[in-house]
Amino acid sequence: MKKLLHILTVMLAASVISSCNSVSDMLGGTKMDTEDATRKVAETLKKNIDFNEWKIYRLAWMEGEELENQLQLVVVEMINRNNDCFTQSFLLSGPGAGNISELSAVGGMATGHVLFDKTTGITLDMVDPAAIQKQYDAAKAMIPEGYTFQSIASYTFQETMPSGSEFLDRNKNLGEIVASFCVNVTEDGKEQVTSAGKTSIQYYEVTFNVLPDGSVEMAE
Image (cartoon, rainbow, N blue to C red):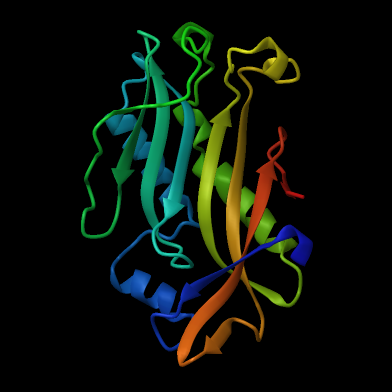
């Protein structure tokens, strides 16, 4: 199990780890591992993105504070009919809830090779609350005994885009859209570490890939 985990720490802001979720509840946030969170992401996209003029090739939503399990941010990368690529973010919770960033040009895209007409695009139908909830439930069931689920850190859809190099693209399935998500877990009895009067929460990040049939597998 540990070979598949990235060990991370976050400064302990309260006396017990469960306080992260308690604070989230008091603030009225939307839990990442719920259908409501995925539905909120879909509603944000529907309200703000003109899918006739834009195609999204990367979509991610994520929690705010580590282990909080509260939906905070949605980020998109997309291409318009002029074949220009931009990124934009939507803040869904916290003090700045409702803020939308300015469009920012995406750097590093292969000019002349990333084209609107050849981009598949991530659609609203793919942001399916019921289907994604099943993926979360399946992932939680794979967490071994001795570890405890804390949060969904992020969920990402990514289309395979051309680089402009035939050599680099030779084994790619261009236009394919894949999904993955990151789960934060703690090891029972080893959640907290203390040194020099400072206490932190020790946790692990596990990545799950979504397979074409909708099932999930733990990434190696």
